[in-house]
Amino acid sequence: MHTFDPLTKHHPAVIGDEQKFINLINDHQGLIHKICFMYEQDADARNDLFQEIVLQLWKSFPTFRGDAKITTWMYRIALNTAISGYRKQKRHIKTENLQDLHFNISENYSGDEKEEDFQRLRAAIMHLSEIERAMIMMALEEVPYEEIAETIGITQNNVRVRMNRIREKLRKMMSHEPWN
Amino acid sequence: MELDELKNIWQKNPSGFVPKGEDELARMLKGSSRSIVDKLKRSVWFELLFTVVSGIVLLLYAFSLPNGALKWTSVSILILFVAYPVYYIKKLVLLHRFNPGDDHLKANLEKLIDNLSSYLNFYIRSYTLLYPVYFVLALIFLAMERGSEQFFDSLSNPKTVAYLIVLAGIFYAASKLFTTWYLKKLYGNHLEKLKTVLSELVSFDKPEELHLS
Image 1 (cartoon, each protein chain N blue to C red):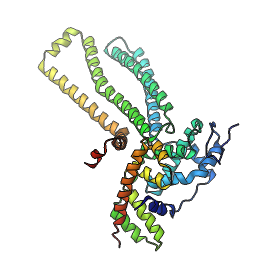
Image 2 (image 1 turned 120 degrees about the vertical axis):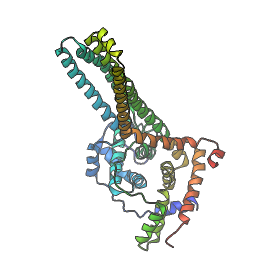
Image 3 (image 1 turned 120 degrees about the horizontal axis):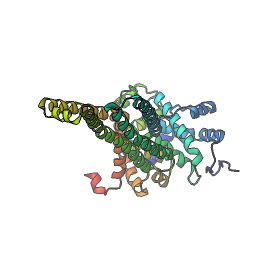
Image 4 (image 1 turned 45 degrees about the horizontal axis):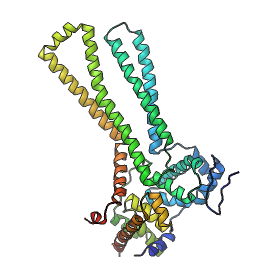
């Protein structure tokens, strides 16, 4: 009988076992949450995207062959859903520019330097393209370049080149501190 | 700024992540999807059903008519209708095979663009080619109804010809405007977005100097 092995993080070909799937999502929901956090600014929209990613994972679950790491499979489906497979519901959210985001951070500044750094990083990431966001997010989550290349569909060399550019863009954006 | 510094900031992520409970996750599995493929499937199913029901209604109506222009127009439209379900069923089979877990982002984008483009092209062909066909058919059967001699006589009247041209123009422009608006509203904007993302990915493969220019 096939069972999910939490040690290897590999999943065998299991057909529609709801409880097993829910356990799997439970173990990795931080990954889905971070993707939603990267692609949606509004809490309701993030919830919608979370649900859509879970649904797509559920649909794809019976065909998961276990020849890739479970997180690679999850990243692939979650990013495919967030970037290409999902039509956002029209919500009246004003798009904030980098200056506004900095301003909001300074207004809500709680004195926590870590939070301030994180918000500044997030504000800068939100100004990258959707592909760049996916790449930097995986890199920040310590996903190896080989897996990033496999998830996006580009060569490892391209990942390396892109990552240098993204890092440079982030450095420029983050060094701009209008509230100081 | 080095990647390690960014990782350091990222891993101290203070954002309030509240894990979802098992009940909530189980409820999510019962929800309906808003993915573009599922929307496309729903559209195709709706159109397939609409075509079949309209076909049956038109068939019953045609049988109730006496021999004449209207009857033959209805029968001709029915024959044209037969082609639609074939396309819709083929499309549904393709969409059912689509699995976002099968491929990487680039391949998925290519498949989605291909699927959406072929669907939209089918619409464009239907509206821009078949509507004029319907128009010409209606004229032919009108000629049959009135008798070809009388029909061609009326065509020698410049006023009638001008009237027909204006009518055809209005018919074509209206169907073209409606198709463009409907397609853009349906999937056009999303398709443009997908193409932009794909072109960014494709640009990664171009030589370095092209990026810098």
